[in-house]
Amino acid sequence: MPEAPPPLMIVLTGPSGVGKDSVFDRMVERGVPMARPATMTTRAPRPGEQEGVHHYFVTPEEFERAFAAGELLERSGEYGKQYGVPRRSVRTALATGDDVVIRVDIRGAESLRELLPDALFICLIAERMGDLASRLEGRGTETAEERAKRLAMAPDEIERASRFCAMVVNPQGRLDDTVDEILRLMETERGRPGRGPIAV
Image (cartoon, rainbow, N blue to C red; front, side, top):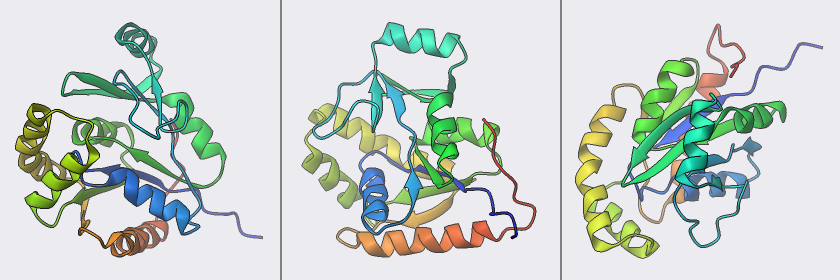
């Protein structure tokens, strides 16, 4: 029997509030075999988030210790909070044999680009900036000042991501269209000549 191709590594990024978690959750609902490594963060959990599933919630001191010990693939700080991708989380996800989705902000994706050059980088963008604003407001996890900061950063983040990501529009209320486009990109990447396993 021919050897199974190595799993894909997908780095899913985009401005705050664009729907990264919603897209991943819909892919899982549709039966797409995906593994998502839990990231590490110093921010507080949002409603419904579980320790070790969505994130490892740590103190700033614990985060700094993990980074100093080389346990994080990358780190990024946005809006006063720290985020990072633990190597052990990624290795555990790869060991499942399923495709792996790492969900990070734009700065995190820029760091991972250097470490994971063979990953598929996808940036979600809203159809209209107003959609981004309404999603952030509906989330209800940030102050008005924090929402304004995130919205102000979005155009620059999108421009930076466009330099190395496949850009996918996530239209309001059409999550399945977004998932279909990502699945098309994944199938193209799966057949890319010379694609090998990713090591972390």
